[in-house]
Figure 1 (cartoon, helix red, strand yellow):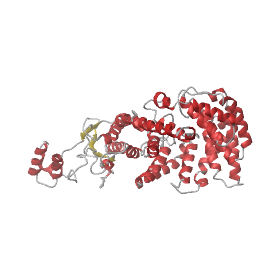
Figure 2 (figure 1 turned 120 degrees about the horizontal axis):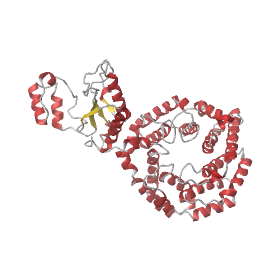
Figure 3 (figure 1 turned 45 degrees about the horizontal axis):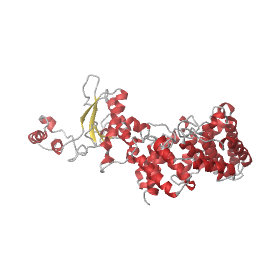
Figure 4 (figure 1 turned 60 degrees about the vertical axis):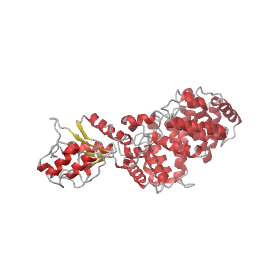
Amino acid sequence: MNKLKPEVLYAFKAFLSALEKKGIAYVVLETIRTQEVQDAYFAQGRKNVGEVNRLRGLAGLHQIDEKEAKRVITHVEHSLHQDGIAADIVPVSADGTIPWKITKDNAALWHTFGRLGMEAGLEWGGMWQPLNEFGIGWDAAHYQLTNTTLPETTLNERLMNSFSQDAPLGLANGKMGFCLFAFWLFRQEKNEKYQEIAEKILDEIHRKIAEIRGIEMMNGLAGIGFATRFLLQEAYVKGEPNVILSDLDDEIYKYLSYPETLNNVNIQSAIHILYYLSVRLQDQKSGSENEYLYRELIITAVNHIYQKIDASFYEEPAFFGVHYLPPQFLFVLSRLYTLKFYNYRIIKILEEIGFTLTTTFPRFHLNRLFLMWGMDSVVRQVSMSDWENHIRILSDQLNVQSILVDELRSRNVFIDGGLSGVYLLLEALKKHFMANDMQQWMIQLIDRLESSDVWRLLDSDPDYFLQNRGLVSGVSGVSIVLSLAKSKYLSR
């Protein structure tokens, strides 16, 4: 297997790993192939047995009889096997034999085998026409990764090939995130194949929307709703938000309207839902019944969060990410303030939590940066001098170098909890920093991203690749951030 090109090996390893997890025995018959072998194979069914065996002898293959020499086994004079991007892999029956003759009894085994190959991102020869009576094509042993005929396959192409595989539906590390990434990549590279993948994923998500039980942003309905609304707003897809999102919003309404379900919504989920509702309120016609409904839901969510605020709300987590609640709540409150219908209550909440926040000084520089971002979001909308003073203190005591070198390890690269998230925070707060400092930090950040151990793991460990493909919690998001950062800071 290691004779295959490194850029396709991950897909084949994922295939073999899936077979092993299912307990399906297999044999790898052939990977790389010489031109001499291909010439001998192509001669079968086209030349007499003597010539076929002469060519097979030159290729180091065993001799075959006249009946076998008349059987066509390849249709091409140059095979993808020769390019190192194809392999012949077959199942092994319980008796230790290869079930070459496909029958009613073993057809299901071949179908399962082929399906696992395709889920790993490979093209299966068992799908090539003509199909036999069991729905299996003429080259059921053959698997290939055709888009790797270019000199090298990019990470983005690898991600695209993997998105048909099983994954949760949510935004952070699931198919909704894959969908956003695929649409973004389509617009970046003008490749309609990526648009087709994105649309297919989006259709699947909305077909399966009833299967989602949570309502939070990361893995639940709010994240899917927010991402769908973003796609509509940015004209990736067409439609009326109130029509497309009506069923999803009905589910969120049920959660927030009944005490027995509302009590089960934790504070982080409620903050994320509140942000989604603030976005959806803008889609409603002024003075309409829907506008009134969304305002009431927002009021319910705000008060639910306020009632749950205790000492634990302010606790600094050991790791940077979405578990640090105050910055997220401040950002959402600042957004709500721009909607101008609950501002008196928002100001009261800000004043109350401000007594604690303006004396909070996180231990980790990462969390100082995150808190600074949340407080800055507020003072952009509301004049609060004590908050502005605390932002300056946080800024003066912020060591970005310590974040990049000491607090984040090589594998901490994702948006949630890693270097990609730091990039987004620094960009949002750049008015507080010197331009030369920003340039230096960003170049260092890009270098840390590109030299991360993550890329080696993605190549060598198929399971790691599949578990870390996501937008917020995976390399799809890193790919976007790297593209943005390079275009802005390496093109100067």
